[in-house]
Image (cartoon, rainbow, N blue to C red; front, side, top):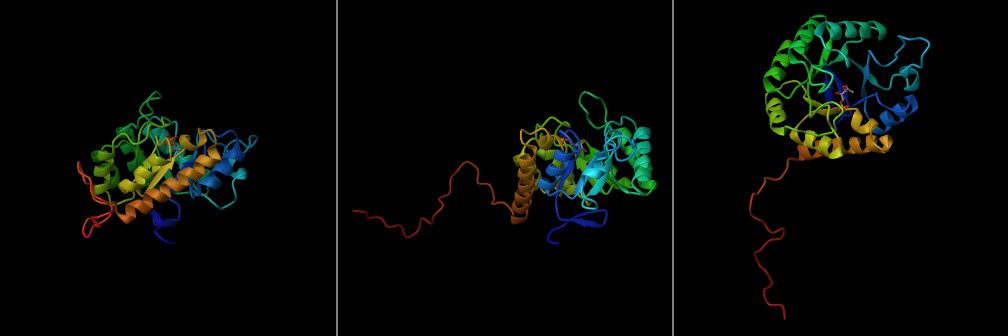
Length: 263
Ligand SMILES: CC(=O)[C@@H](O)[C@H](O)COP(=O)(O)O
């Protein structure tokens, strides 16, 4: 695999991770996931039926068997205890599954991460053997603490979950990227493909999103656009952008040996 994303020792070809919520139905979810090219997909354990309710449609029946790495997440949890309990349940439901997304929210209006509860939950989960990809604020100090605890990926927000406001603080993301030894993925707040491209151009290892795809007029087409945005941003990052020349132009063609007389 060329240029794989490596999370907890496993290689992935796609750097776009997507959520499974907010779609019209499971059929549309499956089609959007396919168009996105994602290999890792999040499932909100408290909201999506993965077999907890045997009488309801099960998301897993709508997805091709074995194609996706499921990333159980703790959407809707506001305390460390709730998050830990939710992921223990996920581990039981999904046959000793270890890779999880930890998300502990501070309040239902902003959905901003509750960083102290997140740190507490991360400590417990890492001790219990989970591979923890953690949603957090774009605070570099907290990001470093989460890495020190042993999280396998740091996922700072671009902006508020579901807001589509794009990357509000590229400077903080840059600080997190410079210090981190584990993958940094932007999570939440992406609005359109250029946001995803900018995250990748900054040097993020990947992007996680849900609403920008599920909430688009044409989710399937947007899923494809996001796939291209992430790929384009990664290519541009690896290519290395030209140095910025501020406040003066530079001709595109050489100025030496100009043909001067045109009669
Ligand atoms: C899918 C998931 O894990 C969400 O909790 C995530 O934070 C996505 O946010 P957006 O919906 O803003 O992309």
